[in-house]
Image (cartoon, rainbow, N blue to C red; front, side, top):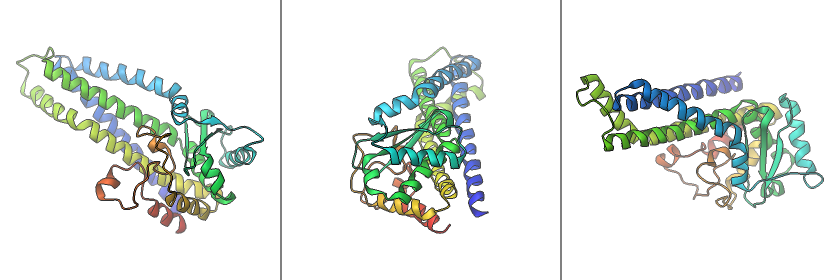
Length: 299
């Protein structure tokens, strides 16, 4: 029951964070409207920009990510074992169709899943991971990524990324409106003035707040995918051993990953010295690997 409770708890916390995130975007839109003398203008602006931004990300985001990472589609017979592993775990997970499989030609040990839903999902692994993982470890990694798809993490993280981008756009628009003077009424009531002051302060902090929320959502989804992956394979040690190898991997993935895509990977694609401070953990897209291994070994 502990495993199922962890999965349910992670889902609840994630959607609470996304709800707060959405409230932040709505508030910024409201303040923009007050700056221009009509709160409906600001809310409408936030809605229009948000819908356009979301539609582009929803339908084209996966293709753009695969292109950015230099991934190419895996084909048989070269990657028969990988494709068969993905197809077998997709059946075990109860997915409507197996995700498409891609590879990145790189010696680093990493993998990620993306897409808008299980019917339009992909799993990508590096050639380094294929070379250095045994069968059980590879299954553990694929099960982790399959869990991101089954749990709709790929959609949640896409939504979080869209909300971060929207927050940054609205914050920039609000600050520019304040600097340019906008069309706001100089004789606004006290509540309107207070809201504008709070909104401007929030606009300065919003990109930081938004990024922290996205990172917090990302970290919780990693724990959730670890737990779900262990449930899928019934062998937590496979993923734990894979994470241990990834932890000691000396090769970064800096030329194929960036800050916009880092949260997608099973492990932080940028290398560090292994010692992390409180601030580094706060701004990390992933929870500490040591903690993930400890939880898996405790199952």
